[in-house]
Length: 198
Ligand SMILES: [Mg+2]
Ligand SMILES: [Zn+2]
Image (cartoon, rainbow, N blue to C red; front, side, top):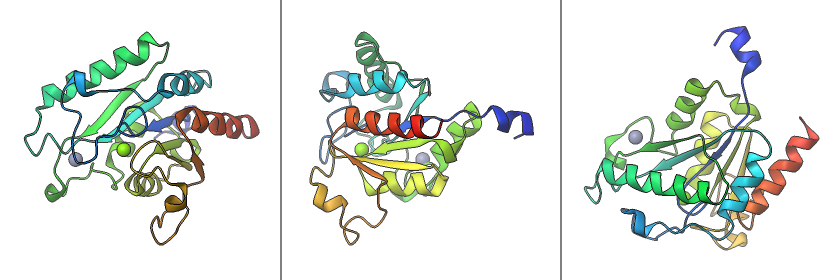
């Protein structure tokens, strides 16, 4: 990145999808638009983040593609339905980055690796150190750390609804910077961070 590009680098908010924006289906995948259910606070959370004028990117593993449970077209249709649902509620997401690979493929993009975040940063001129990631799993926290994302927020709306679990270093070794009841609470905390260090 040139000095000029680095100077213009924007901070961003990265969101995991399942368990942050929409209801997480344990042991299953959101394979079709009719299986996508937005979490109750998702649109309000996205709107609050939009008000900060930081672009929002979805960063999501979708191993169901590699497993043949859905096609890449199915994934694109679910993605379009997510945008439609959020847009109808006044929320805006910039772009989604998905890893469609299986865990055995050893790709560079499957979280906990940093690949998707690094790609998003490269393509959109983002300052990762000043950016935020909201996720619901240890894998999200590890990816954020591996990519050098400044702050990680754990949302309790997905895989780990119990705050005691994510506060326990034995169960959750990558400590979150903040634990949020939902995306709206995460957006409130991120707003406070941005006001404190513009
Ligand atoms: Mg998730
Ligand atoms: Zn991948």
